[in-house]
Amino acid sequence: MRTLLRFGKNSRLRFVSHLDLQRFFQRALNRTGLPIAFSQGFNPHAVMSFASALAVGWTSEYEILDVKLAAPMGRGRVEEAMRAALPEDLPVLGVRMVDDRFPAAMSLVRCADYRIIPEGTDAAAILAAVEPYLAAEHVMGVRKTKSGEREIDLRPLTLSLAARDGSLYARLMLTERDTLKPDVLLAGLAGLAGVQVPRVHVHRLCLLGENAAGELSPLMELKNA
Image (cartoon, rainbow, N blue to C red):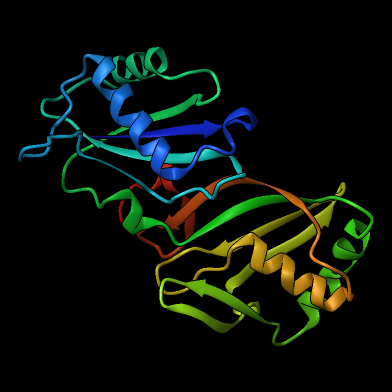
């Protein structure tokens, strides 16, 4: 049996790295008293994985931790134990129990929703660039990978984009092959606007996958994958 834990990452912890977050959750799981499954070997650790790493400096209300349990447990017991083990800046926002046949959470992610708030004197120009960005057939940008940098077309990776109330709301591809990060999107918008890339606050709103019908759905709501 496994549990999918949806949690948030609030602003006070936005500069905690993904590696440090992994270490923290390892310790937190040890404190829960739940029957957590551990790896074999000289340095056993809880069998867990995150659906998607969150960049340093971002906040979120939809992070997913996938944890393997050594024995069946009720959802309420797991939720209560996790709430007690985590600080208020890592709020528990949902718990779902799945069996071991359910795909790993990280394999299900197809895209993510973000709220991106540009700051400074060029913020209005960035927001105004949304219309020409959506009208363009191609908007080229540079994606950094482990093997270096490569040029990519941002438009097919931008599933939706809107500007309202001083913020950008974007649905961006997030797979191993096709990923568009908010900072690369911002660079594309800044290029169209003829301004420097502004400082922004990025908040992840949701992680989405495809349901059995091929439709996008929040990860915690996927029934069949």
